[in-house]
Length: 316
Length: 316
Image (cartoon, rainbow over all chains, first blue to last red; front, side):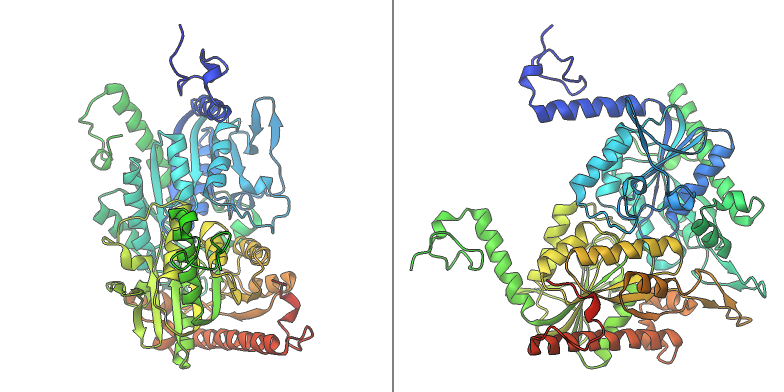
């Protein structure tokens, strides 16, 4: 059968009307096909976002990925921060490189069931800035999604750069069916203001908000053990209530967390019994619960799920 | 005399070859002319940058601008963070609006000699995210520079969003002759890694680095007054030494700074005798010294200035 026009869903190599497609169209169709094929092996996709930088988004992404992998799940961690890719440093793998295979790029393995891809693996000199505008960044993220050999994953955690600009837009448009977003904030007002923007941004892109995480919430003096209200506390929970999204937990500031980040050791592994680790585990449990209910919902094809996340779900 | 082609330096309204310019060309030439005319009233232009978000870049920009204005200088503060414009909140002017004049937009006045422009003044609902890709952001920044009635300024402080992407590139290309950049970092390794990228980014754009500021440097427990090494200390100074750029000072963490930010009161005004205020004043003094020497250098047209910033100056 002869098609009138090269359709988006078919690669041009097999399309009957190959001759009528421009080279650019052919490449775009082939890339889309690769993306679709690679993403079909990933069960759940979660975006970790924040409106403001420096709230510990990468720390949350990294520790969440480690906790999920400790539970025996296959986890991929995509560091979508093109200008400041710090996840490899936090996991002590910054000197590693991505190798090529016949069908794509092989991500760097932290454990057999935790794999990472990051711009950091492609920069020769780590002091060199990546001076790219939006369209080139879009292409890089597209390659991270379409050409990386993730293999079968239970979870792909995407650590986005802060804000509501090119990178989050690119990821959302490329992945298409993101399961949900986690919004990280610190409790001070200026950060909360930006986290409310992230909730609305997520809703605009029809990505359900799994919930808000309040990071750097309260500090205990290591000497006198009294509470120091450095960035205040409780603001994240209030923002969650105001914006009608779930609150996933409060992670206290722990000076050890900074040290662990710098020496490339995930905090949840170095301090398995700490309050912060308990908070990370709770966030991971809520994520699993969230996607579990989403799967049941899908199976039952019912509109009236008893699930408490239902309220803020957006029709996609 | 008839010109062969509409030249970039002339607006098309007065150009002899008006008919040969496309509408788009005419607009671009007119915009360039406006930009040139507006920028000619600004003596010194300083970009405040950081490789990583959340290091307190906006806090440094705001307090630096306030200190310079307290010295009687005319200061403009441009909040170039399109997605997370927080400077108006930090100065308690977030409910204000920009008004139009016959020749442009009138920036919001904090004091008669301190004026601010920010995306925040143009967003109706402050929870609404600005979901813009690079080219639209470039246009917005171009308008902030070319259509704002700054009048005569001694200093224009441009607070950039973190990273090395669209916004810093746009500002550098539009302003053209930036006097220098101030790079803000916190002392932990992951932030320092990004600040080194910013130094190289600045050099790539031929913008001399005025120096590095180490923010959130050390915390004293307000109860027992012992030192808490939250983000460590000294890393900024080491990075400055490594990258051969001046070190401008160390700003300690002060829980009051978060509270002041949230209530819209510049820290240097609320705590004029604090250690952090002394650090901000020192940074302002070094900036004045820097541009002063640059002016002398220009006048003398000498290549061998005794000025200690000379070493890292890049030929433009």
